[in-house]
Image (tube, rainbow, N blue to C red; front, side, top):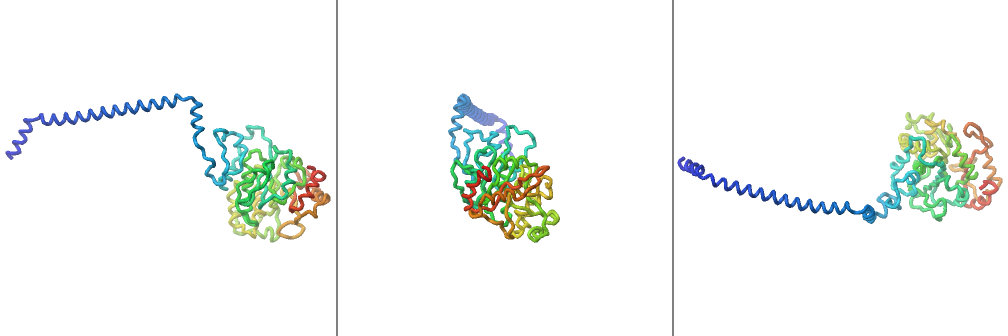
Length: 401
């Protein structure tokens, strides 16, 4: 106890030892603060020099430095092989938005259909819109009747657009002066009698809808030919208040007999319709068709190959909801006089002036808008490659182009 007491007394008598220790600590803190301050000043001056130099550059020098930055040759999107250099061309311009110059893109079907389903709410267009007809070719490969179509299109370049859906990997071999040059769209495998045909048709519609000038949409095959001149076809379609999708009820096993009870109650047997695969429709209905998910999903699930969805999906859907907008007939002629899975095909030996005239006049009267017309067919199928030469010889005398 005595020793502890003595220790405390000695500390109380020697306060200078504590003061010296505190002073040392305070000095170290002051030096640290000064060092941090000096470093901060140096960094600040250095940064200010760089900033002044940056903002002191002329605007054209800044743009030059930006333009010299490396840009990728292609985008990462699938199937996208051409990229516009946006520093040289305004990629957000109205021209590029309203009418894509390059049909190659990397969108999935879901992304494509979503984009194509957009419809402006504003009635007036912010440019001088000239309605165009989109000719959509669904083909397995070559277009053997292409010279006939090129003669048909010649001189009307501002009034039409072309879209080709071929099998994946096939490249249409045409010159860069052809109306078909660069008009292939990204495609997927198609199998006859399956819903993949509907997929391809919707893919064609969606790609064509990306061009806001396209007002009418015609589905054609490599075996189709025009039987009227371009002026007649254009005026007929753009002047019509209806679309031309064949839709009829037939109690036979090849029509109503394909209905699946699994579609009930969303699609009833009384709703079921059949029609030609080769349709024509206006922009409003085209956008509606690529927007549909509910009914397409039912057809994909319940319309098996023996059902042939391409002959029932559009006729049934339009009958259920948009019958008043449809003429319920096709503008593409075919010969079904012989019962078979496909219509009759015609080659070189069949092509005469009288034969082509008989197709043009096969129906003497049909409904058009609120009246009647003697022009009921604009196109015809199926024509074999050998029919090309005699058909070319008849264009001026019979088809008038």
